[in-house]
Length: 401
Image (cartoon, rainbow, N blue to C red; front, top):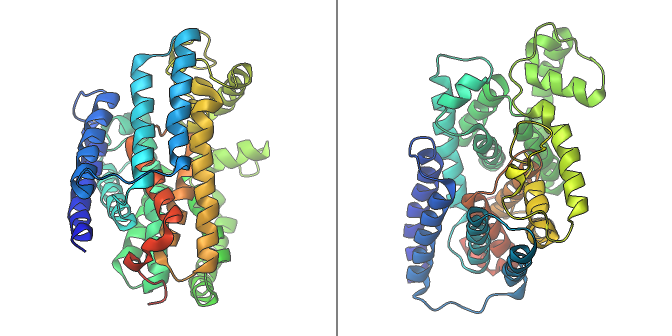
């Protein structure tokens, strides 16, 4: 009981660290790896304080990523000359994944609180920039939080607040957060990745939740969908965000919805197909150990001016091959499988749905942006821990309580 009290108090500090790490990147000229190193050191000190230095034996599944990274570094030092900064980053990320996979450090509810705080800070900062109607390059430079990271935090917040709305009814604070963040994303940020992640989560939620929850969901969703559907049918260019129209037309291959204005700033969206083809070629040429950690951005013949893969899976697989990418992908998907099984057995545990939202947000966001970030790997490890050590259910809330 005393240890649980200590973990609760340390979780407040962890939330503060995560929020600070996200915000400080925009204002303090500290390299990302240095910032990650400082944060990981503080987190390790917390682990020692919580467990008193008495670390239990880790499960072998969580040791494999560290072993494969060690093997990768040995081979790359001999063959491809990896970048020291990228090596340090890889060890920080994998060590965080290892620690949070084995020790009860961060509550899932703390991840939710962090997501709410960061998303609201990001949304308010965007709306304060003279009411821009569409995300643009000059606006992105002035934002409090980077748009890529804001995408994943918005996705997490939509999933968390939606779950709370279904559990507690729509007359609660989480419902206001859900509506606010959804509107900010649709009207201003226009992140297609965020919406895609939430839609996929919604599909899982409908299938896995109890009948009474599904009935509640449909009671509110059907009227909203009918009204919005009528509005879209009457004037699609007015009620569908512009970047969503452009994306839809590109996926279909023709202008199913006419675009009457020039394209707004689409960032790297238009070039991602070229980047994907190029990264696939690089991976197939070096499938086991990759081209060397950190070497992608140094390549002289990149297909675009973008020095990142714009895809976390390719960040891992291109720079480090299967030795680097396979462990992360495996832990992500094995945790998702275990989580779905746990929900199927115990549909009334709300934290299992939180974990589902985290995992789907990560899996989808990884496809469309770079998220080699310490908080992301912390969250993956925490989800893995709770799905592997599901005896900790006494600390969880009940979905139908």
